[in-house]
Length: 146
Image (tube, rainbow, N blue to C red; front, side, top):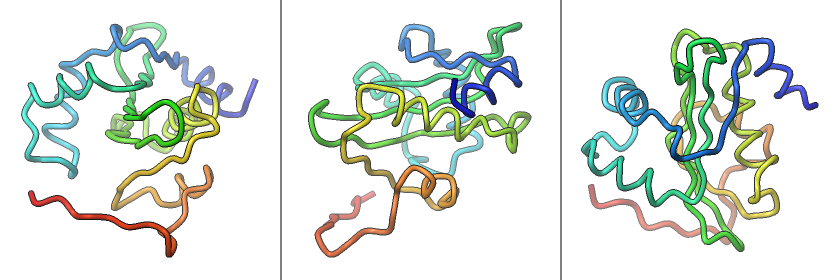
């Protein structure tokens, strides 16, 4: 059992990658009111992204079933993956749940050996623990037109 699994158990939280279990309303409520990223999305846009995701990880309170955190990934399943929509609800922040979700997504899943990418304005220290680093001389990006 990893330290991140211990965190989930201490919080009485279950990490699950079943996309059918994701509470779309709960995730959308967070993304629509609290997230700073992809504010242009509609609920239907998110639903489409969720259903086409390569992998999702939900963190659920074992007693109530309430969604406590979430992450989504897009990937070709062979070489690259993009981590998106990672969040922990305010009541569970600072507990290590974010680290447990990212660990479950990246280290414990089928994408362990993939090249992972993400864009974020915060939590750089968290992602650095998983090997994320500033772009290097090989990385090119065309910014969104939105």
